[in-house]
Length: 361
Image (cartoon, rainbow, N blue to C red; front, side, top):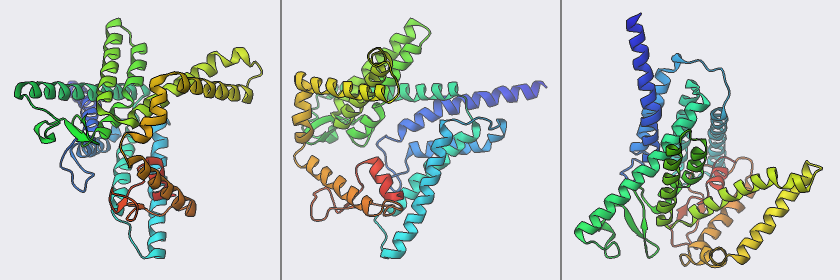
């Protein structure tokens, strides 16, 4: 009995290490700058594979009795890989042509499906998921902060100027004629993607904290995430934060303001919330100089030609999707800009939802 108890305690300790240390570090490293195999497999991806194998090997320790959000992700990617296979076969047989890098999508979908299935088998509780998410966010901000302070120290010690040579320093890069912080990532937008969910989630964790010290710690990490995010110079990051703030404001108005004005409920309250948010958005854009300048100028002039080319990419992607809405056009690089773009010959759609739709229908 004593030996069984020791094994059970040891198993629980390994479980905790894999879920709350190994998994957060692996997730963060998926955005890290590294030498990858086939541009998709690096230390982070291998870490997730090891995590998945561990979950599969030890799956018998817990039974699957509940449905959770993880199950719906599992069904989504399972349907996605099935539809992508059908699309691949159909388009290959009809066009007799394989799109460049077609197998990247199969590898990416397969890895995600394997990872989610492994978590699905273990059936973690909602509290465990939240704790893991908390560790992912904290790891992201802390490691990014360590990279930033190490970078600052190196620049001061060796009197480097990032503007002279981007190879002189490790964690910044020259993008669109400006120095932008990239952390451990390959480019600033990858780091921005990792930092995007940090401030709203850390704010939530602060409100849920049981002690004042923990609440201030989460708020401090949230402020740090905003600071590092600003250093990336990513317009997509600012759009993500603005969108999140808009959702939060919409929810608050719908729950606390509109019911006091429109008492009949239902559709009328939803319409009322929409109208109120559109009015507030219009007033904000017209009255806040910084926001107005960003909306009317910076979105289209941050980098000459980039916005026009992306609009061309999205336009072509939507056109192809409307031509094949059920099966899509198959996995791989979808956009052919040989006559229009300096980016390259073939590109992904530069929009995750559009790229998925083109791959799977």
